[in-house]
Image 1 (tube, rainbow, N blue to C red):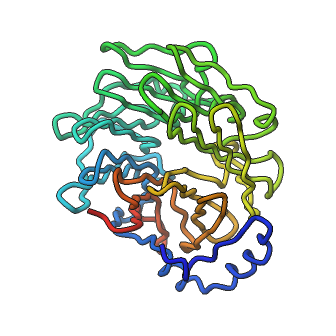
Image 2 (tube, rainbow, N blue to C red):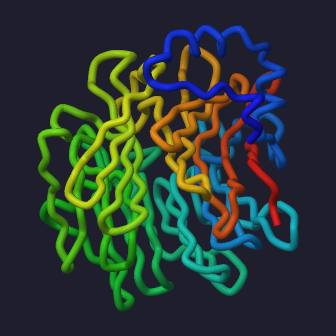
Length: 358
């Protein structure tokens, strides 16, 4: 990303930078950020959106979401292979929007909708597990999935109307009890060491080690709601968070060994009325050279991508439609992103790209 196009600021110069960004014409900001829409999919008369992205390498990626009235209709997945995006056929009986997706290799990927667990196997999607939808649409909420192999998969559904946490091991699904029963989303340093956000209001940080989930206690985590989490190693974890009840107080937290450090985000953002899963801070992804990209949804204003590197913040405006999720392409400084773009009456699902793809 060109430094001439994106203002870099220290935390002490936040106000001046905010004014400077607001003066940028939308078209100029969008064209100079390095983020661009590279694939678009829509169905006439319906709302379509990609909500999740999984990348297994430079040659394989999956953008997943749904299409239908209010997003309840059918799952849709686009597949990056042989240098292009194309739609991947879904099982006819699969229902609901894909909320999360995970890939552990080019030949093994997993996704969750309101009612199903979907498995990419032998080059096609199958329904691997279906849950009871007696609660009515959109069914028990599923908010995350983490796959390590075809026989080692975690499904997360935190919140008061959530499914809970399930694990597939040795061909059997088991419901998790104890502190890990109410996880929203997780990030894995390895199959035996994971970090997660849990609790009814996304107010807890949890760690999975030695086969057990435990709550992480620290005064610097008190009173916060957490948005996304990324574990770069068992002792280096990054978390987005906010102080409940206002448009300011958003921050990026870093655990380095046993010490948490907070990096305040120098811009205010409006808060969703939809609870913890709707916080304006979205996914967090490494940028490939020591920094991080954080997606945002400002709800009442323009969409931005935040960048954090070396203790300093910058942001770039990408227009009026936010990027919902992002993922680094391994071994590069390039990323994929997902979201939607408004049409005259509905919306189309879109894939974003940043950097030079291989």
